[in-house]
Length: 125
Image (cartoon, helix red, strand yellow):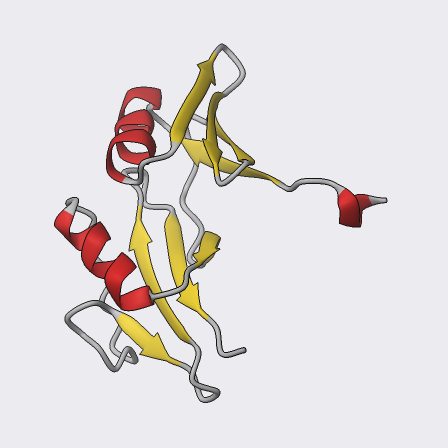
């Protein structure tokens, strides 16, 4: 049953205006609506509900990620739009923050204005 449904992502925020400026303005997501329950965005046909939680602490790990065709070009695109990569010491490419896994897959991380950790990844077939 659930395998045929579309996933809905949930992201906490303290400030709807900052979240919308980031997700719509920097990441290019499509604004759907804003009401007292959530800021709703569409990305690739999937719903992201950004929920206002005044006193949350961001998780120490990735909360949401996107699989991409060419991680280097997406990392450059993000950086050029004012979204700097997280530069973890284990990442081989410190310029773009890209870590190459033992199987050759690649992952890079960045943060939203609330400190939520997001990622992009390119996986080996």
